[in-house]
Image: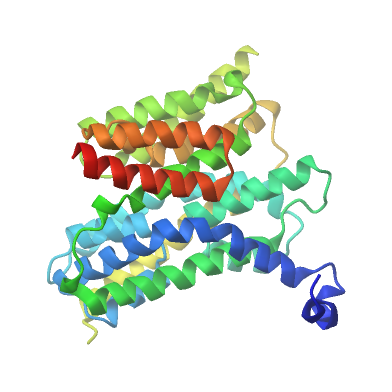
Length: 246
Length: 99
């Protein structure tokens, strides 16, 4: 512990400040992959006619990158409100499952705090928060879910997302395609490491294989973002059926 | 700077997105789950994660598939940061070399 930590009052209550920092640090590798995509989204949005005020409003209030990419792809002037809102719901419907998976770990939190924390739920903050809670539960730490760790990861993600989508809107046409540099591989890398942390043997992982196969097939055959919902739901059905046999 | 139709779209997007975020929590918060439901919930995170990255597994670009294979191997034995760096470097290099 450093001297500054020793004199800060928060160090007394079990190091809540260090929990926040631990969350921010664990999110850093994810940010590497996020920044180029945030820049691209911002640049694309201005080409579609969103202003430098409207875009941060979207990324700050909605804060769900996949749905924002979809919305920008579909954006016209004026926008088809119903279509864009429906697609947004569809792309983000995975949050329903994610929130459900997180719910048992949030029981010790007051409802108001949980609802506020859930505003910052995204693939990355959820995956980090849940993986951490499971690890702590395995190590016998209670409560398993560390709200400050989660908020550290989530706010790092939030600030980065809003700041760099705005930067993308400002820099706009000066940016080219970032894909050749390989930054997009950061997402599969992060997700695969998180899945290894959840690994409980091949038997337990069979639903994941079902999800992978179905999501990949739907992605190849059906346009749009249906593949996430299709893959997730078929994996869950598989898990349901397999649990019945065991 | 702010168009009304744009503002309405953004606010509604944010509204439905927030509903997806709190929906699962509100419905399942105070329930005791059966063994079967617990099995489903335990499989759920991996199912969502693998579905999100499934397109990478069926890329038409051989360089991307090779980089993904390297990343999968790295993920099974290394921690987060080295795996991410290996993933980015292998994708960048292989796309450069293979095309």
